[in-house]
Length: 291
Image 1 (cartoon, rainbow, N blue to C red):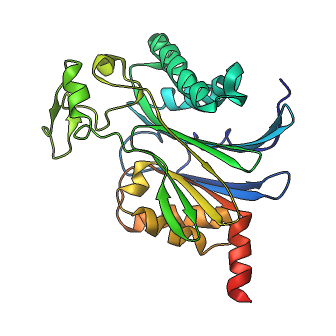
Image 2 (cartoon, helix red, strand yellow):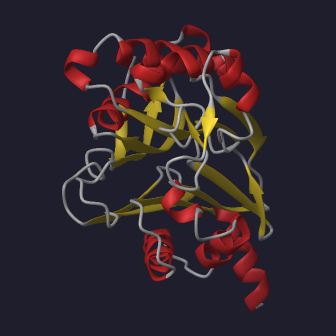
């Protein structure tokens, strides 16, 4: 396959710095994106990684965006950054059945992670991925509590499902696990993990799921922004608040930076990672408003 990236920010955002930001644009000017990652207050290295890039493949333009929020180390999110999208695009049926290809790639990637515990450790990661095909068809998938929110005419629409232990308690218990608020006040699988689906986490895998929830929607002239972020943002901000902040900035990098800055101001203590994609529809709406 012919892989030609016009802008690739995936080499950033796993780093060791306290913050990372940047921006890029598509070949056709259909959209632009920005990203911002800020290390949380916990006494461990940054565990969030991201992908934000456009690429040409088999005559199609793809926008690839993701947030990977690691726990118990950064090895698993770093692995996802390098391999998950590649595995999705390796599936022969991607162009005819993206949903099935995404589902199969998530499973294969999780199995690969579990088979490499000696190298990657016993930690894990949540994931939210978004694939935009030819600027028209958006496929969003997630495991865990990293989230994607799409705005159309300024109205926020959550494109992901938060996989929390309380909401999937039946599945956890059917697999022989349990949900406990001890220690602390957050429901956790076996008292350890605050999400019910994740990549990796070998010690808990028999009680966890790694199959993604997948949604598809069409992008049109009313679509203005897409926000992907780790739970460090969503713990302190509603979907609509995030969209309202993002829409105030013509530059998506400034929008992403403002979102992470605002989350820090609201005393979010977790790593905070954010990707903002700005569609041409937003510029059209601004022109109408100014006119």
